[in-house]
Image 1 (cartoon, each protein chain N blue to C red):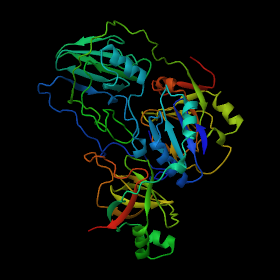
Image 2 (cartoon, rainbow over the protein chains, first blue to last red; image 1 turned 180 degrees about the vertical axis):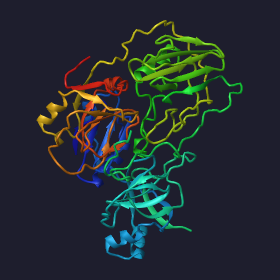
Image 3 (cartoon, chains in turn blue, red; image 1 turned 135 degrees about the vertical axis):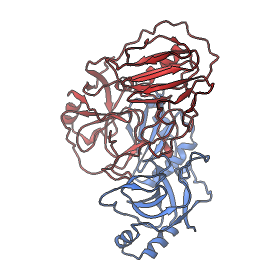
Length: 201
Length: 317
């Protein structure tokens, strides 16, 4: 783990892999840190304090947190009902060198974990455990991706919480809202959560 | 402005950010005045939003902090009317806001001084009276606090409107009546708050090296910390875009998106920096070369298009 500066109120922890990020994030959440916020991402965790935070002391405390002691919770995965009817199914299958049916099967059987959130409230970047996903983005982003779109890009899959521009490949749509202010909690996908996609009707 | 979207964001590199229309806006301010104690929006000006200290602690869900751009001015406005600092104020951009009191109210304005309004001192606005903010001669954002606070319904723990994510109360429009709360706190015995006001002079702020300082060589860093940048008109609550001499990168490649804070100075491939303010994206995929000292970020929130800004590594206060 490398510690990089992030101004007068934060420090950025950098790791070699997403797996390390997830382990350390879980451990940091359980540690009693004087932090206002933790922002996990692909290779980093931003630890956020405020103007009164002693950053060198915070760094010491963070370094003392051992991810090895943490055991991931064995909670049941979040099940998201989806329909595989996205416009880009054919293109993605072709890229992977498989049939659309095989692509759908792989995606449905994959064990996904929410690596981190970003881009928009409730947008989770889900990483797979079984397959090496590496999907190119659309050559030119769509100006409007419908809310609920189930999409793939790079090593991740995700559900667009609302209509927005987007360059990910659309393979289907979710039958539940990824982010709903009238639900508690509003975000369906939180970092570290395990996710399964199931075909709904 | 067209917000710098991180390259690894699902929108792709050249897209515009998600914006409020059609988003999760909620809690429309009451449209009819009725008998509620409130402030009627007569004119909303170029951009007026309700703000407080935002939504800390929810970044992991992709929810940015948001809140008042000039936190010190927001805090002072509340103090002048005897509010707890966490109550909501109005943040007016370039003045233009016209308010009418439905009941007798006590108000104060801070930040950018506008003609047509008392400034840095509490004043009474009687029922039916109007407050009309002219365009400020210096500074950009004016905070209007009302005793009792702007009492629109909070969204995820805050009344701040985040123009990037669309979260929070919708932007007030002419005809809206914003409810005003009550407070049992004593009124402060303050006539005038003697604080430095925003100027049109070149602003010099302190920076420290950011997490990706090593994407730039020492010559580039020297250029970054010596040149005079100019504030671009494409600036907003998300960030201040700057024009100047482009900075070369010492290395190529893409950065995996990583968390950022207010005050981050991000360097897109153009080599022209973006200084992030209250509604910054939670994560970004371009290298953050430096951070502006948190105390100086409030002053950056008052920068006007065309104004000059310099980043210094030595203390300037």
